[in-house]
Image (cartoon, rainbow, N blue to C red; front, top):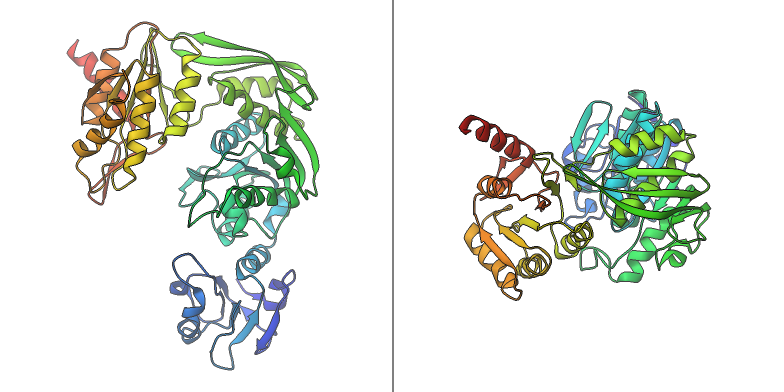
Length: 491
């Protein structure tokens, strides 16, 4: 593929420091190791390294054009274009390189502290049930037709976003739903196109620290950027910060929530328990009017489903299709129920810090289980504070905690368990410790009592265990199947 440089610069403001813009480009590159003759190289200032320091070496490899923020010293025949922000320029250039694929798709971007992952899968599930072919980009993976690509970041670099969009359009997708992190917005990973629909789920103080956002106001501001870059904005009207997120928005606004003023609202919410399942039902009112039931527990599941419904309304999805899809929707590793018995409920969830574990356990207690059993471990080479906090949360809220291994990494599993016990020790909570995760899960299943809710927390969608720098295959769904089959053989 070759493109005229002037075509790639169509939406870029730049100053030509040397050379000519009358060139044909063979590729767009932002990793110096991939530089090749005739390519355009973007000097990106990253957290770890600065692309400007590779200017001379990519020129040597035959790069035809460098896009820079700061002047660089390279041979005269190399064109050097200076821009205000090379990340923003990369998004615009990548969109042009792939022939503006977002124009061929209906694009849906979801931002917020919690609920992004579940909501993206719910939206995909409903749209596909209604006959749309929908791509997905998120924390767990990118899905293009039958291809699944594991994710490194919640929101990939802008070049990858555009490449994925192009592949989706090529695979016959008519829409794409993606998670948009505040980091992604701050680093212009979703610049270069306008979303058809932007969604705000909620915001809580999170991701604040030296490598992320300097304070809550900065975090809020970054989330709000999505609503200067979408046609329709759909907002959780119950969130206390919604007005701040709306500041400076340029989109049409719709709201959802429990409040009477919400455009789409949930009324008459009730908990539903079946044989080995937990769910929630409510009456949808406002812009649409029909009953909804989902096999996912808790108030946050109401919010996630309202968001998905609000999106699907813009696609003209029928009431029947929405109801059917919501009833069947499952998200891997997010309150994912696995049927092992009709007597008690077992679920897998990614809750891997104190805040998410507390939110989950409080939700499950509302179902008044006979016992709430929580199985978890903590990652090695991570903060000890997380271990104390998770131990305390589980000790306080669960009737029984089963402490086991997560990803011990370079630490001894028993040392991590001892730290978790410090937290549990602050409570009256009962616990058992079983280092081997499969044995621990078998214990949970074999000791399940009628009416119990058993949570396997922390691993969620992950299908590996990391020990001493090596990843070993370990998927809890597979472990559960193995345990059930071994039980059959032995009975």
